[in-house]
Length: 301
Image (tube, rainbow, N blue to C red; front, side, top):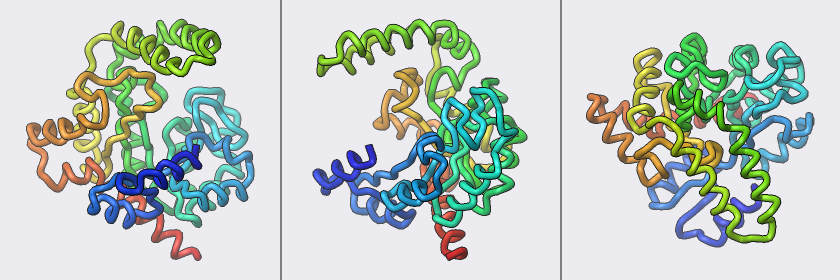
């Protein structure tokens, strides 16, 4: 998959370029092209080996989500059994090495204790690349107000996840009720249609059918989560996480794809947000955190 990103950029250089630094992103954006930033979701993919972590960095990976939905050998997931009481000693070594490299520590998916351990261990600002607000939708994948305060003190950013099941508690209740059945349908389809090039379109049709069972969730709900973060800890600590590739088509109405992002800016304007705050939320906060991670890394080299 990392190779696919690099190959796509090679084939379409007029449109796309892989970014390695915050300055790269600004330069690519000024040129009217898309900056691709590579990440890895789930620390299990370093195989408990810092050499592999360093190799990923050399391939262009600039942030790593410490866990995915399952606890790994050195960090507890928020949606699995806790076995390390947060981060193990090696987990703290991973965070320290990421700081040394300039790779952003992503705490989406981790347990609450692992989050606080990562905050304590990191010398650089961390990110929650695709999480939402627990005060508005009380699920483990979202962040509590105390966690948001700790994140802000660290200088980090929460990037709001667009999943309807993360934004609205009623939608989450319906989703949890049908999730296993939906996933079985999709798994059976992918086996039965293994040779069909249109199998992913068929998969999306199943996702959309189940999405229609949810109560209405839309742009206003995303804005509500952003506004909660801003009112609690300030506009320096909110961003857009979307998670389009990971939320199984459960997108908010009015935010079906990235072409709808201007409606977020418009919504914030209508809510009375000043331009400077909107620019931070729409991308400047991420660039600030990335830049600071680079500076900390240079200071350790």
